[in-house]
Image 1 (tube, rainbow, N blue to C red):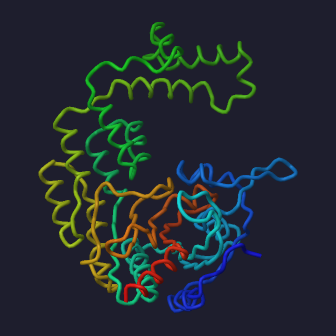
Image 2 (image 1 turned 30 degrees about the vertical axis):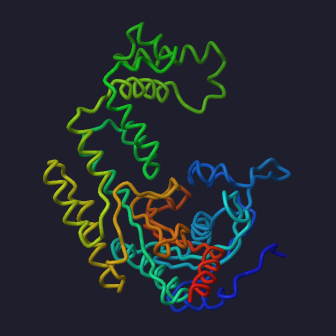
Image 3 (image 1 turned 180 degrees about the vertical axis):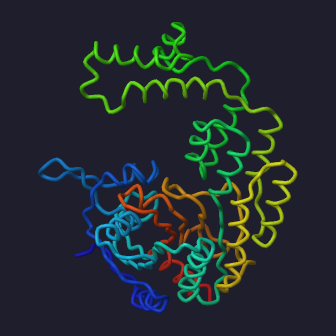
Length: 380
């Protein structure tokens, strides 16, 4: 039996999901831990409740629904597009509130019209919250990781630095730390004794010689029998570390990146601002901005009020599997996030899908919604 009561509005919420033409699904409370540890991100990893099977398999209490719903979709070979709805308990350590609580949401899998699916996710989340909180003004904060990725790629950063910055997207402190490191013109040195040794031996410019040296070292130490990476993989990683250490941003490029990350304005003004930024910076952001513009148009089609949505270029959410749109919804003037979601186009392939499946979705925090309903009633 659950230790917490299901909110009274849950039945009406499920009726909303049915009207939105979704398929109701459930997933086991006990889940394999590996997908969450590999793909969910550090913020969620440190909050998971772990256990172990009799055979030594790492398991966990279900910390969220997106990964389990995607795994279920792959295992059942359900055709796409398919829209799933869920409502159930999740378990994770929280700074505030109980560690066991209810979440509900929709996962929209396989729709090739990315802009419309994104808009539908935002519109549906706003609709179900508005039905629970009539008369309250809901506001949406929207970010776009794909635009951020396009900006740093157009700035010409090495792939290693692009990966580090993308991983930090949404974490303002970490992102600023990495930018400060890129701006520091002082020599950072090397990344460890092994890199220093091969540099002194002059092997960083000769990949075959470096691979042979690493292979010989692995064999001599007995590491090769248990190695998860080949000598060539390790050689390429060593060279990448040196490249990362040597990369520095000039002042003009650093200023452009900070100018982009400072963008924070109503969605109605965001497209024009992004195009103006790209033109001024002479950056080619065509595909990312075309999708952004199409999403803004699609939001109008689904009836979402653009006056309630604000675009923040630096806004992200603490889950590593997001690839594009990210958003959160609050009651205006309050801090509690009632709904959050985004696009995760690479997740199903990483989980084992044989073909690319585009995906977007959102989750609702039912305990926070229940508190918002109570606060709204008291205010009225």
